[in-house]
Length: 209
Ligand SMILES: O=P(O)(O)OC[C@H]1O[C@H](OP(=O)(O)OP(=O)(O)O)[C@H](O)[C@@H]1O
Ligand SMILES: O=c1cc[nH]c(=O)[nH]1
Ligand SMILES: [Mg+2]
Image (cartoon, rainbow, N blue to C red; front, top):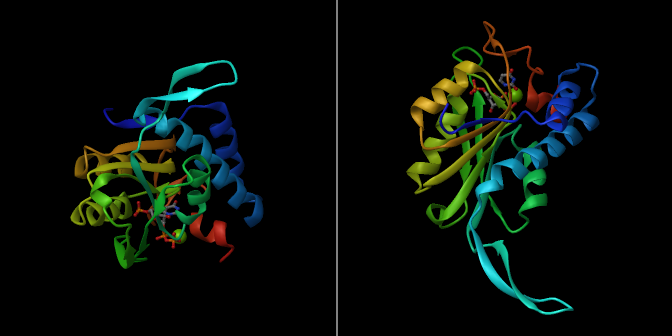
């Protein structure tokens, strides 16, 4: 599928399996989410623009590639997306961080906005939206709607687990957005939770249940 990249690296798959285990506690869960974000970011930033710069080694002067001056932003969808931010910043420490607060209405499963603060000049940045879970796709679509309304143009979306329904909905709403997904699970249940999934990512990262 165009613009959809499924991460099949053994390290990512292994760590996702550890996340799924209900016996994995909050501290370990949080560490794993951050580590997976590093590994996924490594893949997702494969196409960052490069430029040749002149560097003098102890031996001689040479032209050598460095990431060009592209401005970056990472935007977590609160709360669970926060767990992936430090992983991305490990790779691109100068990225600015925006926040979009959404929670799913327990009845309709549709997203409700409660916060949005994005870095300035969002239109000139490569925006990486992070959220461990892509279930119905409602939250991801709404977050990317906000970013585009405020001028965002080049957007990547990183999720650790995606449901087929969510990937389809996000693809249809925003076909220009590159989707990076750690694993595609089977389906959603009647409560719009991903099966087999890992439960409620926000609650497991922050220990709220
Ligand atoms: O694709 P969707 O059907 O929209 O579901 C995915 C959303 O649900 C979860 O957030 P939740 O509403 O549980 O908020 P939280 O992160 O504060 O727990 C998850 O982190 C996503 O943001
Ligand atoms: O399975 C799911 C679905 C939505 N949000 C989660 O945290 N988990
Ligand atoms: Mg939650």
